[in-house]
Length: 238
Length: 179
Ligand SMILES: [Zn+2]
Image (cartoon, rainbow over all chains, first blue to last red):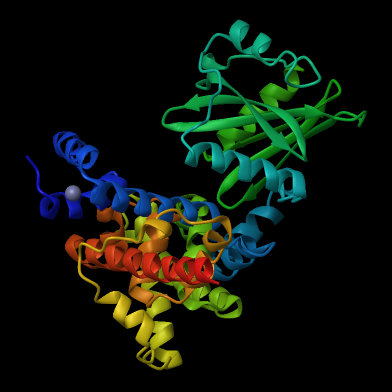
């Protein structure tokens, strides 16, 4: 039997998920019979919930990441980077790939990071495109083209309903080794088709294009050339 | 590795944690103008030390550097030791088995919102532990890695932070229910 003196310090450990399973059982047994410890546990839980609900998470001002990374970037690599842009026939390609930032890309990158952080990348987790496609029916206002690229090393892992630009977007999740990628698909609102353009936001690569009345944004942290190849492959297909 | 390749790696490693770095700096420094300067210094340090980073727990690694840079900035800024505060400091020495008053047990919505200012008023060591736990969801071990304190110290700082918050938010609840 656990005493109050033994139980009291453990209440906080349990709240923080730092207590081993056996002690959790013993503690709960004590708390169930002890009004003092029950109050203490409820009070700590209320505090923690209030903190999570109301404590401010300060968001960096717009452009903060870019500004800082630019200042930290070593001079030599700045020069190498500029040199590459000027050199060879690569010049044109690099200019196309220059970061083109806009609010939608920012949102897609944020949604991508959130999906990794929350450990909730998929609402429907399956590599079967014939399961993923119908899952989106009635959730977004268009038919979602779902394809697997396992042969190229990007395996379909599932789908998720997300929100970009204040409206529902389909998010297809691909697995590449240990990395997850998100392909966001939205209605293009009648905008013309556009070839893939790439950029870099907060360490993530992003590629965007429009095709067949839909807008696509691919976000991930795999190496630049691989992302580009995948984006061009996907864009060519639709 | 070339400078450009190293920078690319660095960018990919810290990119996902820049938001957490900013949030921590703001909570520690309490000034947005200082935060950007201090973070620039922190990221330069991080890039210099990047060769010694071996791919494990990037967030803790980066936040430890951010945290240390913030603390040296605060020392440089010469922030005066916080004056003794009767209410706060007596709350901090309450016995371990504090039993909250029944009416203080659950926070009402308006008290819950006051938590922002009460956390900001905590001493920096307590504030840091509480923010890393509740906003970053870090384990005791991770907080210990970031702050360079032993796990036991982390636990007691967290515990004291909570006791202070309970007392201050609960104290307001009692006052409110009397009036
Ligand atoms: Zn008890």
